[in-house]
Image (tube, rainbow, N blue to C red; front, side, top):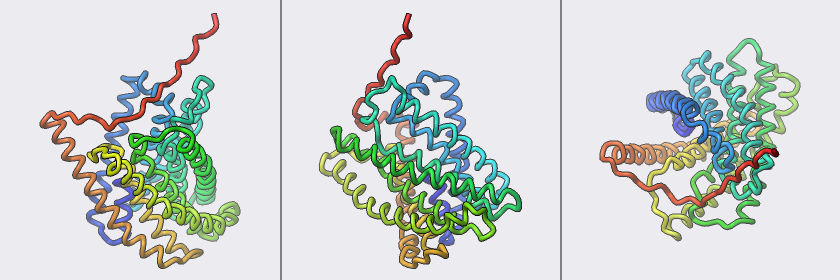
Length: 347
């Protein structure tokens, strides 16, 4: 997710060679992570079931949907239309299936009460997954000669669902922050996904606006709404950035939690890259035409690239120390969450 969207961001600003290298890293990472996930499903089914029952972890499986959508967009940028179509199919199917399975197993299942303490930033990946379908469908729509109406309707459908889901998830996460204790171990980088979800919603809305006048009536009726909503989400996402930076300061400076490499740091890179891409398309959309937003997009693309390089280098150092030198770094502390056991069936 992170590498793919930063690749798109720097390609917009002319760094084609580096963007292509990052596109290759994105594709290889997707294949590797998908293969490892399939192996885990086959060999460690109890762990998978526990993940789906844990409200803190279950929504993380939407990263497969979001990552597939980002990779599809990268492939379209590389003029690999057939592979892009395949990734759209995978993205849409996984979003549809996980969109019903994960909320039921992790949140709504009657054996899980209460589930609100488990609400965290990963819940926003549900939104990101849906909007990735919208972005990929809207990006693919002008490049094909058939099924254009269907792709436009799919883009509007998933974009609209994502907007509503963002409001619902934001309320639940805000309730968790206000009703339950919040320690520095809880202010994890995954909360940056709340900003990333606003950014990809902006990008999806901007892509819907760019669909031509030949589109289906549903799409034409939604274009102005998508333009206005995109501006609102962009403003709110921009407002969130200082809040998230302050949370990191509170976690690592005030409470002195060590800042070292952790896989969740990629949760910061994806929102930064997505914010850059979303700002570019919002600023250049014909309905909006916001030059200031385009300027912000240019600056943010370099910020995202620098942050990606820092985290990537930290990851390489971490892998060298653990795999080559054998130094095991203890994980960041995490507040325990007890998953209620399902009651025994009645005799």
